[in-house]
Image (cartoon, rainbow, N blue to C red):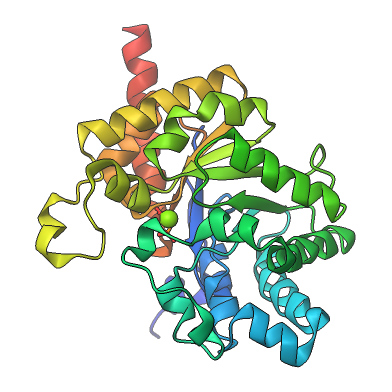
Length: 311
Ligand code: PEP
Ligand code: MG
């Protein structure tokens, strides 16, 4: 009689290489959480909430006007919860809303959005959040609720900050809604040259982590629009200027006991993994399909570091 194929008889259990560098995964839609968790990643390095909010079809203001604040907070809580459950107790780093005005304009209520020449240089990320603390507060209340529900694996990350002033303003708003900023893990994305150069002040303002958003960090460092096909060949996340900003930021963060990570696309590229591991990054967050390769590459670079140090 034919033997049963062994592969079918047992479930797939990925063998995860042990690495000193944590390898996490990026999640853009809550529906991908199960697949992301199955990679064996050490957590979520970036959970984008744009999809949860834009899929409501209305701007936050319009949605709240029609359905009330609670319904809006509930939407955010349930979106994050789906992912936080899937990964618990592994950490899930949630980024606060970062959609440019041209994306909000597609929504009901979007007619009130400002028209901007350069939306990517404009009213987005933490700038918008700090300008509309009344709307931002709903997101912060969602985090507060999640903490009350026991999701202590949820972390808060602020996009497009430039300096300590942005960080202190965000921290004040967290405290105002009752989030214990000493106890919870929160931090920033390093996506502008200014933020890389201001890292010391941000570290002193109390961030727990800094995560490189290399999609934006590259576009702003090189002045190359990430969405412009005519300059696409100049969009180089491995440009020495970008790598230098990353290396110096990691160095300062290590001195201040601030964790470092990457959550831009470049985190899935072997050359960037080499640069990051060699400079002592704490974690790397990759696309779902790249997690396994990044784990192996990080392991390889770590082993080489050890061997080089004893040779
Ligand atoms: C980045 O800028 O690298 C990033 C992860 O954020 P987003 O791509 O959403 O701007
Ligand atoms: Mg970005």
